[in-house]
Length: 246
Image (cartoon, rainbow, N blue to C red; front, side, top):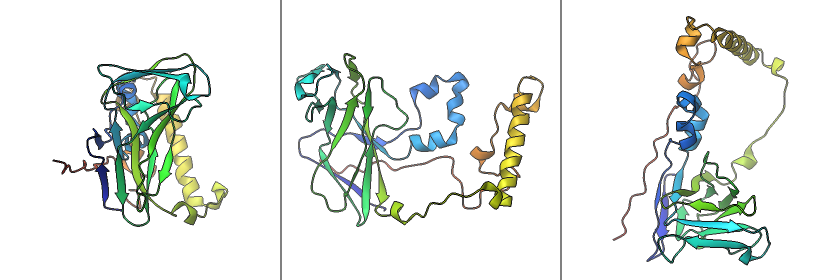
C-alpha cells in the first residue's frame, strides 16, 4: 500500500495536500478543548484533501431535475462544480486518475470533521488498481433555498487507500464484558477515576483542576498505567504528493 499516484488530466488544475490537523470549529472551542480528543486529531489527518480550484456559490430550489441547482461562479466564468445527476446533487469532476497497487482501493469521502451547512458530502470506494475512469465527488443538498459557498482552496474531498477485502475477513462478535475480567477491571478503574476526576474539577485547588483533563488515552496508557500493548500514535505525518508535472 506504499504507492499512490495521481495522473492529472492535461490542462486541468488540481490541488491536493495531506489533510491538516486544524479545524476552525476546533480552534473556536473553549481553550481549544476539541484538540484534546486524539481520535478526532487522527481522523482529521487520515488521508489527503482535494481542494476547490475557484470560488462559487450554489442554491437548490428543492426540485429533482438538473436545473434545480443554480451555480454562480465568482471571479471567472468557469466553475469546478456542476449539476449533473439531478436530485439536489452537486458534482465536482476530479480531473485525475488515481492508481494504487494491486488489491488496493481508494476510499473517497467528504472533508473529515468539516461540517457544512445545508449540504452533505457523499462517499464512495473506487477500485483504483485497475480503473481507467475518473470519478466524481458529490455533495447532496440537505435544505432547499439555502445558498452554499465553496471557497478557492477549501477542501472538497478527502481520500485514503484501503486494502480490498479486509472488512470481509473481519469476524465480529458480541460478548459480555464480564467474560474478560482483565478488560473489565481496566474499564471499572477508568470509570471510577473519571467520576472522581470530574467531581474534583469544581475545586480550583485540586489536582484535577490543574491538569484540566485526563491524558491516559492521549499518552497511550491504560488506567492501570501500562503502555499500549500494540503500539500507540498521537500524530500522523503523511507525505505530500511529489509533483513531476512540467
